[in-house]
Image 1 (spheres, rainbow, N blue to C red):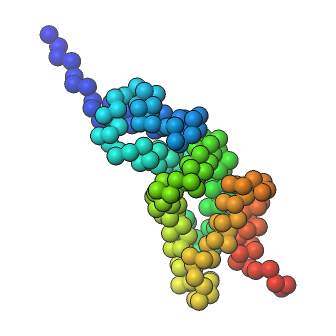
Image 2 (spheres, helix red, strand yellow):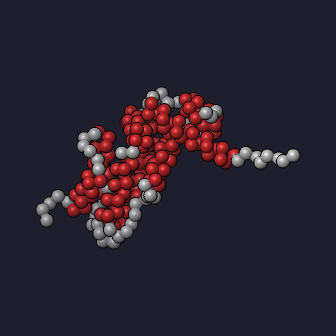
Image 3 (cartoon, rainbow, N blue to C red):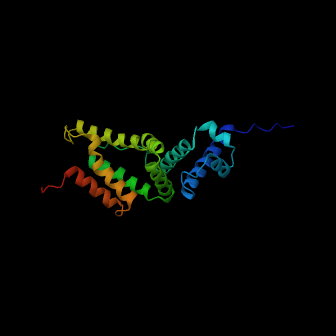
Length: 204
């Protein structure tokens, strides 16, 4: 009698993980963060509640990890390295490239709906807001800081510029437009932000 091979536990775990990610993101869009529960995620994913608690301590951790995974997938589909800013020696070109990719991600329906749901909840839920910033936003902002410091080392940015403040000249306006619908976002818009931020508004 031929013995059947043992099931591949790693593949089974990965399928479960993917199902949990999808369930968490779908629920937070459909019912909002407060009504999204570990029990509901487990039921939607077709797994036991204990499976989720074995991997994550709380629903916030599930959602943030699912969101990070979604962002990585979106970047790879666009042929880009997730959470990376190129350093070609041309600061303006590098910033335009990463901000264009950000626009594409923000306009992707798979990303936009859960992102808005989490961002909105983070405003009223201080703990979730801090986790969202610490685990998702701050690491991305640090990439801009590193790229601007590299530009300073190369003499392309004034030495007295604070990179953490400077990055807000192009990141913050984009975030405001997207979150508050104050205007359309596009590649042309972010290209203009880079031009204004790096070249200023004074006559030349």
